[in-house]
Length: 584
Image 1 (cartoon, helix red, strand yellow):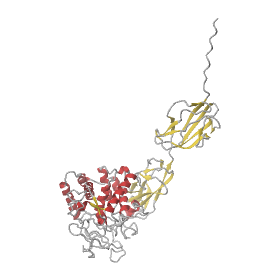
Image 2 (cartoon, one colour):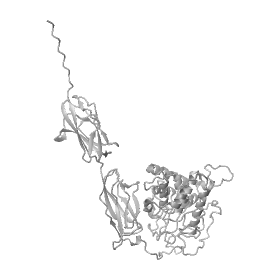
Image 3 (spheres, helix red, strand yellow):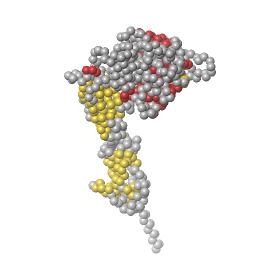
Image 4 (tube, helix red, strand yellow):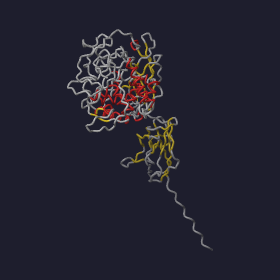
């Protein structure tokens, strides 16, 4: 989906309706075994609350290729001979570097978010629909596209209205945003969703490894399980909020699941089915639909034949050159057209919407959530405004799902409620900043506090007597279980001290003791922690020559205390039986 689209799909255009009808026809004629859920979703699905609460879509709901997969199943193992390829073989092939990026992203997500169950075929389907697999695999050895892939400027004329958010850094457009790269991220989304998939220290939306990994994290950013069809639908709708898009992506997912294979980079076919108005960063939609610069040496021939390599970069479908920033006299005018103010334009400031005190124990989910209200200068609520919540600073606390950024749309009361926070292991204050997407107004900071793990009760796991003879060792080790509010308290810090008496918690100078690594006697153990089951088993205890009753006190973070009694006594000796008196 480059800025050089010769033919594009626009929302509401006739091609959308045609594509929808074609998809329905395909559904009815598809071979047995094809998942029909995609057709149902296209008719009935609506974005989930989470999907609607996101940035609207990863792509800004930009146009996309509408080519349908062939009716014939793909050939997963095409012959390497010189014969003619079977129908469907070409379409099933994915350029080597692009396919590698999808599979590496799947592996990374399976490790980072195993519950998401992201299939690489989903990334391949989105990559096909968004950019024709990076324009048929026109990428260099590092996975970066030979030339930029840009969507049309989102100026509200047939597309969403998204004014510039990156000063043209990614898309070369300082007036409006454009979707960028093989997975078509708009700059405002890439800013927080971008990833470094090839470990080169950069997050480049034009690199297929970076873009594929970012797309995977974007699709898994909520607690969705993509092996569940309903969650899969929600994830796809969050990428591009269109029922036809959902249907189309699902068709390609099913097609790739039946088999695919690797083909050389730069030899993939380019999609054809787009609208033919030449929209993009060139003439505005109001300009008559005339061809752009007649520079089409590599345009795909009718039927989708492979383009011939060219020393100079060209765009999918050919027919146009790289879009110029709006400052170029031959491009879009630098003065934005007169458009009515959006809801976002009317926001003057953000106000706290009654957020309660945010406190959670390390490793726990916060029970309260951040609420922010968007208001005009007069204090009137503003609905349908995107508010971005960003966790800043050195912390491992995240939002549920493992992300440190979440974007939520305000409701009819002007309120955006952030996802629940998940406390990490680092204790202390955590700052969450709320900002308005697409509007420069002061951010609003919230402070959340992560406290150390704690227990409020301790109990021994056994009742065996703890006794020892002078100079010996105790046969039983002390084991306790920590709980908090009746639940297992895992990872709780604890200390164990042999004290002088119940009234004197000073460390004893005689009696039972532990041994350190050098075998020396120690009567205080620090830096202890309960295990995953809340259990804490102390090392063996030994006794010196002092007899009597002694006390071992165990304390945990949170105030739980348990005192255990230890006895050191000489072994009992049996008295000899009296000798029978001599008989008289």
